[in-house]
Image 1 (spheres, helix red, strand yellow):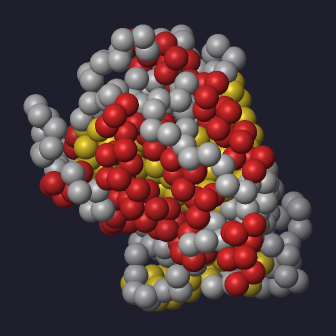
Image 2 (spheres, one colour; image 1 turned 30 degrees about the horizontal axis):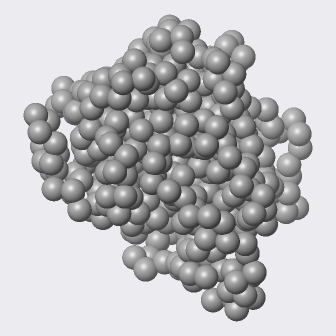
Length: 443
């Protein structure tokens, strides 16, 4: 542990302890601004947009370089209060912020986590909904939807069927945010059950819906991520703590297997932002009494921290040309898990692949050139707070016309309707060709 940073922790200011109560917009903003001012060396507060009523959608970034991305430092995010009447996650994220900044330089593990990760925390995606709740209820309150009465977790583009609902300001702000950062891992926090739910939330036969499930190519990783969170929450892991609710073995479930959902945020993150996201249902009662909040913090603290660490799973690196120039928009994927929208390098030539320990063949493909296949093994005990690092140096010279630097995202249409059968997964190049053509027409 760097002794200088431990000394830094002793020099950082001490702010008043955050109390366990519900913080409305004014109180939440005051707390976030206080943290940003008192811990300016490791935090950055900004708004990604505004709600229908003009309330800021605040994000606090915690990290050694909070204002800008650094090569090799993965981006992580937590988002809460998407449904305004589901309140526990909102308060847990405020307490997580408090714990992170007050631990920096004093706790060696937390200091290493912050130094090696850029952590984005959005306590409330639906502040209008939260403020609209006048009579809190365990099951449903008027503030679930945004001010325009739209359910924000049914408001995103869907890869399986047309979702023609009007995109809301809060949704559009998050979609823009996802385009500006290279997010690797995420979770959105909800209430009304005790379970960690993982993609897909919607599906087609090719993803397994005939078996009452809908699985991603990275199902092993998603199950690991969900279990990582649930297993450290003493009540969630039991799987049966909510009355009149179904049981969830080990506290986890595939989203579609639970109930199909169109236009959800976790599917959108995975498909169009190449960010692994799960949904955390944290309380049987959506809006519990304030005196219960300390118990929720005690149950979730270890899970919240351990889940952030998972952003360092797998392999990461950069792709360069023969002159050492980083190559953007290069497809980098494990050969046996092709994504419907291929994972690509960012503008700095970076890639991040969340993979469990094991042997893989990594396929690196520059548009218009032959694929490069590389075998690698991810060890069971990797370096703490860092994925395996593997750079690729390709025998070609980068030219602006040879590798597109424009937004490589796939068109936001039901991509799985273009995939007639599961066998299409074994022929990714043809499918990518059709997706690229569609992108040209839909730009």
